[in-house]
Length: 113
Length: 112
Image (cartoon, rainbow over all chains, first blue to last red; front, side):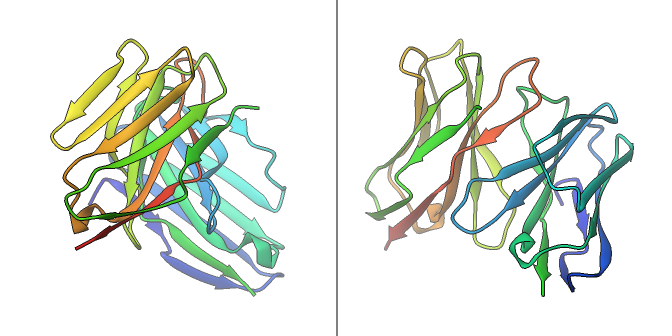
């Protein structure tokens, strides 16, 4: 186990549902990230938290709402999603935001019906 | 905005041959360039990285080169093996920044 745990691993939801993705890291890192991975596209940075403060919101629609209660936990709250939001959502952490190695979780595979 | 271009998108080589993947970055302030390998159904994992004060770095069969003037960097895999088959992502970031920007990925197939 790499130290970054994501749950659930798979999620199927309707467009009117509300669900949350959870990420937890046991590495003592101070930065956490959400990336979206769609087929044949670059890993898209969504949000960055550095020392619990949100430092980047990469023009993400408001139907995605992040929450970082402490440096070890990161959530992504989902509501009123669209089918095009179906993707693999990867959480990552690093010592600090910036020029540092990212450690990724295994991802949450989201399917929006 | 910042972006990283990666080529080729797909690469097929015979076992034992070399593979080269190339990336170009746009943010001249970038100073850290990691490469991640993602096997099918698994998470991306760092395989090698280079910082801008170094032109080349090698780790066994893997090497990375950096040309700061041209703003491009490359991954070289020698003596490829079937287990090298995966998607490889280049990325760029900088001290004081918050983003790691990824290339679109290269799917490498190593044929036995």
